[in-house]
Length: 249
Ligand code: NAD
Image 1 (tube, rainbow, N blue to C red):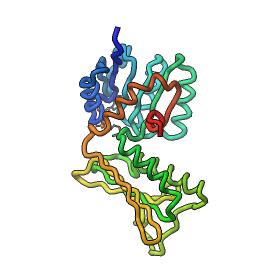
Image 2: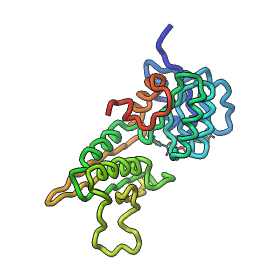
Image 3: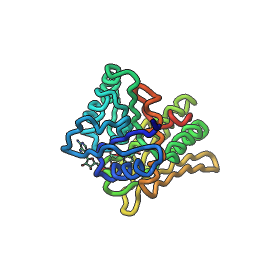
Image 4: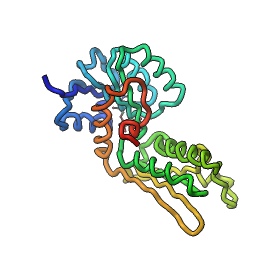
């Protein structure tokens, strides 16, 4: 009778999961039909049309497989989806009822997605590039998924432009203080009380510098992207990595 999308959330008691529950309740076109956390029986997923999954990297693949097996599309924010996990998931989705879609998004903040896109565009014009990612001290991984993804995009753009790895500075660096290297790009990780999620991409050329910076001050910054995923995942069967593919970037 209506176009309301029924949504269940897995990891519903967590920082992201509880914010998603609130956003789903507040949006005019979505209805929260299930909240699940560790130890809960997922049952019939509350009759959901779409599940949103924000749990922990070790549990996410099994949770997503449970939904996919039942033909329920999933929007996934949990980190840890490396190539081997994605390969397994792609095979599972192929066996799933037709039209089942999964969106895996390392970052749901629209500004962060634009930052990555702008950095990719700029990369071929600058010999020097470094990434600084800054997060709250509770973050379990470093470098962040967003920094790793940005470095991949920047590295690929440099490769295409024939630029190769970012050259080493001449400074002696016995302690690796110039950061980890991802796809040939130095990435620096800062963990500080008071921060939420921030990233700078610094691009240097002769006599100039371009800085592209994004700041998430609050988890609500991820909600427009999560809802965009919820509204569109069923129109994108198969596995999609990155919300940018839903945004025409
Ligand atoms: P959190 O620790 O606050 O919440 C995780 C929740 O998952 C907890 O309530 C925990 O009890 C629950 N959980 C654990 N095992 C479970 C299982 N087997 N089944 C169901 N629930 C289970 O963490 P958080 O800050 O909400 O982050 C969750 C994930 O989302 C992390 O991987 C984080 O890196 C990622 N994240 C992604 C984005 C994005 O934009 N994609 C943004 C922020 C965080």
